[in-house]
Structure formats: C-alpha cells, structure tokens
Amino acid sequence: MRALTVRMKPEYRDQILKGALEDGRGSREDEAGCLALRRLPGRQRPEHDLFYEIYRDDAALEAHRAAPHYPAWGNLPADWFVGQKAVVVRGTMIAPSEAEYR
Image (cartoon, rainbow, N blue to C red; front, side, top):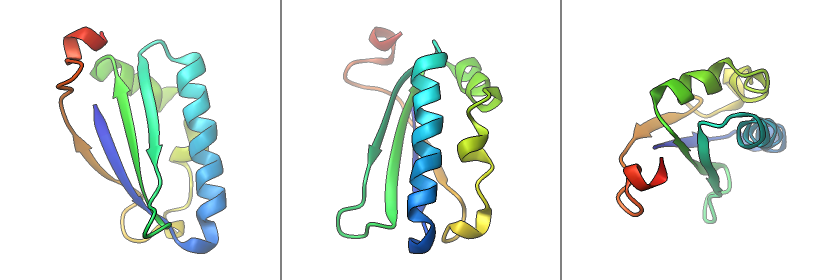
C-alpha cells in the first residue's frame, strides 16, 4: 500500500486530475495487480490531495509504472506542482490485512 500526497498549482488542477483519472482508470481496468485506487481531495486546501493505492506486490507496482496509461500521470510537467510532484509514503494494510487483500 502506498499513499501519495500531491500539491497542485491551482491553474493546473483540472489537467492534473484528468491525468490521474486516466491513469487510475487504466490501472483498475488493465492491471490485475492493482487492488484499489482512491483519491481523497483536500477539502480545506483544494490544491492538496491524497491518492491511496494498493498493489498486490512490488512487481505489480513496477508493472503499473510500465503500463501504457501511466504517462497520463507520470509525464505531467513538474512545474505544475508545488514542490515535488508527489510525496510517497509506503505502508501496510491492517484491516483487512494485506494477506486478506491478496
């Protein structure tokens, strides 16, 4: 499991979310190793979102990065974001457990 904190420049927000949606749709439809994708929009700060992803294993995450739809997100210009494109935090599922998710 991993979570990505994304801080977008307001003028690029719609384009960033379009790329994220395209990448996410491809992940769910074309990648057996992608178990869940969620977006938690920033309510108090609309330019600050959290994306939550669950992949079966590290190989599934690597396959995601090589998928044909990934450039819709992966190739977005860095200057559309505040700071890094995304701050990634890796975690472990506790409920349901990761073993139950697989």
